[in-house]
Length: 491
Image (cartoon, helix red, strand yellow):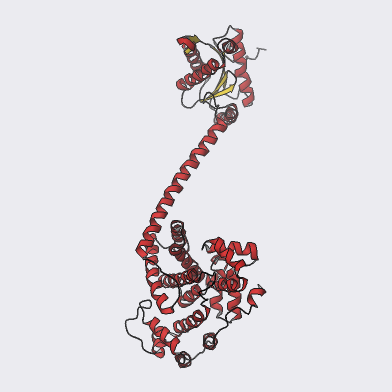
């Protein structure tokens, strides 16, 4: 920091600038006094008069003297213009070397003009200070470029005209950013305190003093306007501008668009009046049309990306909850489902049935016909079960050749009826194997129902359904067995 502020390479202020700074600091300055001071510098007087008679100020009458300008526009406007002209004239960097003075002044001027237009539109009192704050916002950048030279210019090159990124690089490599350096330099030059805030906080307006936040935000939004006209990724810049315009000042898209057009027109005018080297500013309609098209394409890409992300998330969820072979739920999902449904049934007093299904002699199918046929048996069996069960039911592959079915709101009789229908359909199913041949399979099914507080936990309900499967196997397979609790013996 000291290396920058103490450098002999920093520009010194001319006498007229020091006099103007002294005058603008005085609260009781006399109009005649400031008029005389400005009039003693013909070049400064001429620039101010050209400016106040320009379309930027939109005066209906011609103003021919500084005294007249002071009466019509007010003391504050003329003081600020005088200070701006004297400072800018002395801050122009040489056109040789590696510093991109065209980009520097293009951003500064766009920011200043757009900031003042916005301040006027939303009724911010400090309109002239907003203009000058925007014009001087990058004072620190200029100082760092002149004192740190190539080390700093390399960071500017890396940022690719993105000032938010430049501030990050400055903090990372230098421990300070151009906004802070600019504010310290402005204070060293004894510029009015009101100008220090937009210089110091234009990259982070919400960190500035609350009472000056509207003015600082106006300068910051002016920077967003500059981004639209300067940056290569104009679509993203336009989107950021629209977002901040609405968030900070509640501007509609239409209002924000009009501000862009007006800012470009007035920037061309002020470039001529301030005689600033900005290079070609282009055609507003063409630049904005390109930016709008880029923003639309960006929005479409983001929508497509969001859709693809949602699809990937759905695929990940399915992968985590679905059995990869049969397409029904996996055991992990089933365990969560049965616990949730058990708690709900217990709370609501509604029945809950569980079916356990075991494919009969499945090992023999694998041994005789191979695992591919075994897989086909499981796939077709799962599809049949899912096809014929009520929508509220959940089918899961519990493990190997076992399937489990959760049937909320289904009592024991209805569950037994469904189990018998599934059993008969499986027995009638023909699974194709090589050579056009088919094989038949059967299944043993156990049924258990939680109704009236019969079971204390989901695990007890599952064990009861499993006991039903063992009972079906013991009875010769290809049948349904229902778990029925033993009635207590009579005394």
